[in-house]
Length: 241
Image 1 (tube, rainbow, N blue to C red):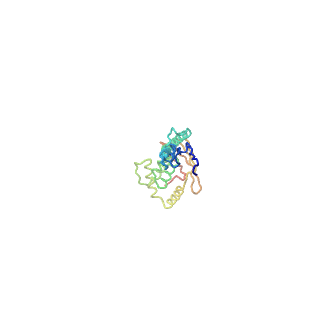
Image 2: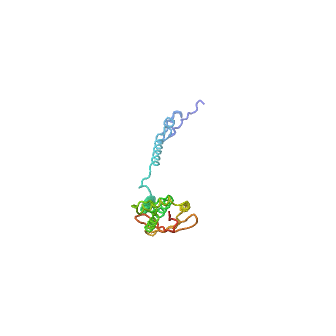
Image 3: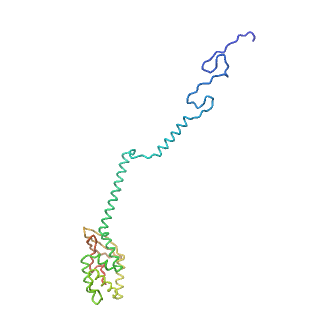
């Protein structure tokens, strides 16, 4: 209305409106340093956050890829590793010692019997003589002298060679009935197994099990690191050619 007094708009500090000015001409507010909004009102690049995130990822990757050193292991784990290594070393040492002992003994009494068994089946007379003890060899020598009568043998041969020669010639001259008897004896020997054995120093006792449920006990002696069998003339292991 004409003549009405005009009022002046008071100035308010802090809301961005200057005294006597309009609200559209406001002064920009100061933003925090780490504000995601830039001075122009748009989103500012999150450089600091991305840098920290990238650094964190690299740090985590480095931590996962690194392997713990011995100094980083706990005392319990280190102790377990040491004990495991020592146990493995002792096991290898024991197995190696057993192997050397068996090799030194020619494979033991059982191996000596297996070799003797194969030699009997295959008529390997020289091996039979080598795997027999002194008493059994003496028995072979006497039998060879007796059987050599009427055989064309070399008089210069003796011991193992003489026994092998006489046995070879005797097998060629035996009757058909004797051949069948020896074949049956070899079949029993082929299936013979070691039921038990007891070793006492350089001597051993072995019990053999035959397929017809019969058992026989033999004595063995170790001479020059080789086990030898003691075979009597009543043994199934004694072949009278």
